[in-house]
Image (cartoon, rainbow, N blue to C red; front, side, top):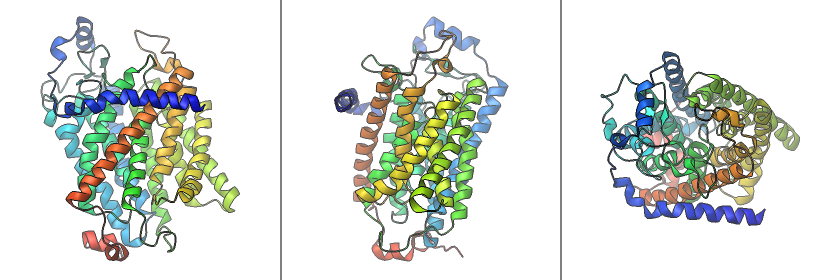
Length: 471
């Protein structure tokens, strides 16, 4: 097993090397590839039409995923901090929603989903240029390349759906540094992180030309249906870096830091659960059978994880806490995300149980053994849960769910080759997000400073940063 791990780590490092050498591609506006579209792709575009049912489902899914951040994540995180930091915590989710919306419109979407090269998109959709040309036509993801995917929705809807993913991912990171980061530093970091970490990894996995989606070293492409690598591992490792760079909260380990309002947290987790159906089932980008199965396995895995966390806590601490059950549900949602479009109900149950037990251990025992202060367990739930889900996708993936017109039996995914591909995707995400997040935190620290003073932290961020107080 150790030999296999070394081999996969070496593969991931070699695969990342061209990306490091190709860093200037961020500024390299590649010419639009549509002009060179093959005849087959052009025919597919002409034949593809907007489907009103698919479009209606995707509009609904987009609204559901946006609800996951505001108000879902905002309430979930706010309920777990102390009273003096509730408004500041809600403000983080709200401000990130606004910041990333504009960042995504200006450059984030273009860097993530235009063809570009294997590592980054081009700037052909800079400021959403060209959106007025085919606003009422069906969108083809990757038009002009071999991996093009004709869709049945307009590009505006696809862009908006992906925007909601780009919004919630950096918002998840905020849970790791809750109670101690400057608002100005948070704003600057999230804009930079969205451009230099989120957009590239989204391109690697979900674009038509991304290297992880295409596969490396003769392995199949990484299977990530709705964001195990792109969203959860990405945010989780950035959150771990954040709490290590900023250090522990004042009084951590000595003062009572119990949540002020667990009811807020449970309401927020419940909104996340409901919104996650748009997150996972919406990633089918249609309203067909795959979306239905994604919704089914999401519900099963979430319930299983909540029960697994609850019983693990009950057995080790004597009582099942309300917050523990809610946290377990979120862990299950995270773990099923990459697998949701690839697995059947039985494996979903296994994934949920594994996520509940392992994330409980990571958020309690592991955190205390290693001594880091991950305020709201961003890494313990999202980082660890995302890794569990990504790896188990390689074990349980069901090929027929990948059926296309050209491959009616589906791609034969699952097994050792797919598992190796999943490991490489996990390692690549951990390396890129971890390293670049560390660099960005240091840059922001030089520019505006990262952390409030000890006196300000003790007074509370609501008053210090926003001049307001709850109650």
